[in-house]
Image 1 (cartoon, rainbow, N blue to C red):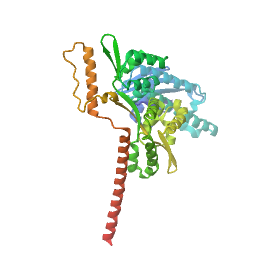
Image 2 (spheres, one colour; image 1 turned 90 degrees about the horizontal axis):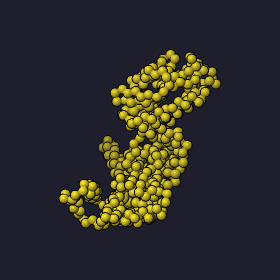
Image 3 (cartoon, rainbow, N blue to C red; image 1 turned 30 degrees about the horizontal axis):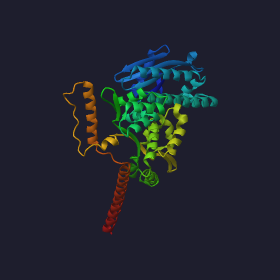
Image 4 (cartoon, one colour; image 1 turned 90 degrees about the vertical axis):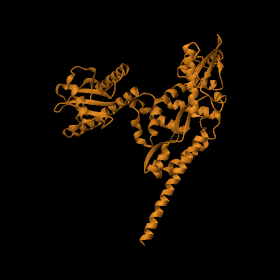
Length: 442
């Protein structure tokens, strides 16, 4: 659900019109006209919603002081447009953002000049400079409002939700401790409170159980054990986009491939302890919206560095250079120069995976029989838990034993080499055919 942000302006000759919308060129003429016409129905400053067909608009009408307008006021309306229903919480936040936007315009005494860009030739040079400067400023604020709306309404992926949880050190280390085997609940509580006295143990365990990462098993009346049901890992993998460069821009391969190969040849040599430290770092990267926004865009391929500011809101713009430096320092991205332009590429892609715990995998026979809940067992809660465990075991049988880090990297490099060789052979074949044709002509 990506919104469109539109700023409407009441032109003294034309009437209401959408003055600027972002993302640009997404608002068609019909919708643009209908949005502008809403403005005629509003006479007092305030927030309101308006719907037609599948389009939901949240609007805020307001006025700003203007030395160049009849009545010394310009009439404006900011609209956030959605293509599906939203909830009241989002509506309240959009209202807050819209009020902030209107206050920002009202606080600038010369901002009214921005809306006369179409008549700029009718003004003197010093006024033209104000018009151009403020025109760009208002458009920047509209883009800023758009990105704030995107961050507000974007649904997080499962990858992000898991990473956000495991980016907390006390959660990460709790799961790592449980990965060695089941532990009595009381022992686990003592360890947790000793290491993380400021955190709530019961709340943490409840959250992990709700996420189906752990299972509390009661033996007898009193004794309880905690079992890890899923290992959650964050790992680096070679970016798929590297292979695509062979076909789309083959000359880029000579620049990118050595950097990717060099890094992963060293990554293969990391110890288990180093991998765990790296995994925690990757969880923090994926769980951070600012870093994840950049990562998501780079997964689609390289992008010019000067386009990166458009990936985040102005609120995050000041932190963008720090984000890029951070990602570069930890070998997530690489900057290179190609055809006199600087590009940012994804050096290592990141992924969050879940797997059956190692200590339980070792206990499984080669062929695991399905675990079926005892139909004679009384107590629906116990049956439900047994069914959940049966589904987890079934999922493990489908996935099989997970590939090692070395196997994944090796497979990627083999695929890359094969595709590169295939392309090379195709070129040789093409050149050979051309030579034969020339010989036949001779």
